[in-house]
Length: 236
Image 1 (cartoon, rainbow, N blue to C red):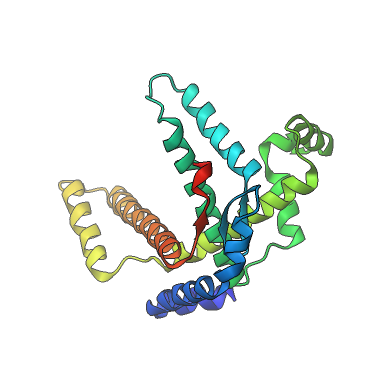
Image 2 (cartoon, rainbow, N blue to C red; image 1 turned 90 degrees about the vertical axis):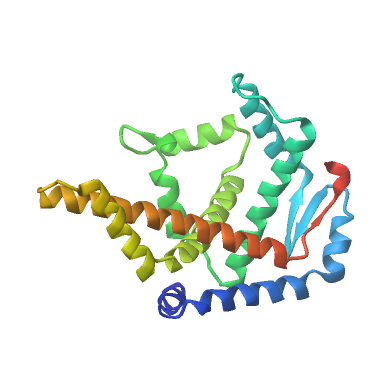
């Protein structure tokens, strides 16, 4: 399915808009009384589709932000209210991407999850995955393997959606001309064809990365504005 969507969206730019519309309709229909009722539970800070932001999850996100700014004395730390808003926005956005993954039927297979775990540097010893190190580090962080793997699987699903959105972004003819103009300005007087090509490729890559980031931001904003996200303001 990913391949079909990617190929179709490349040939037909409007395909991504249709995908976003389907997701928007799913949000609108799916919330209703269910979201309202769930949001009243004492340990739920926010509801996004079928996903909840639980109080413990919110506190962890807030504490991570607080610790980050405490370790950055050269930066002025935001006040508590602003930190809470940043934390909840980050968590809500994460849930939105998961809802999008659900809507597009993007799953993570067991072998994908296993490979992702085994490739992480912190779980390796002498250049190879070490089960003892894996379990010891999780224990030190007070997290069970099942909980860690559940979170990692969600991360991988989000990465799949974001990769799909980014793959839609390509340089159009006008942007390709801009690449040539910028490259011409930086290569004036150069005779080394290989160096000229490197500069041209670097500029094209920079513009493409920028466009991919813009695509992610636009898609995320569309998800946020088209959904009926419920946040319990008393926690903020």
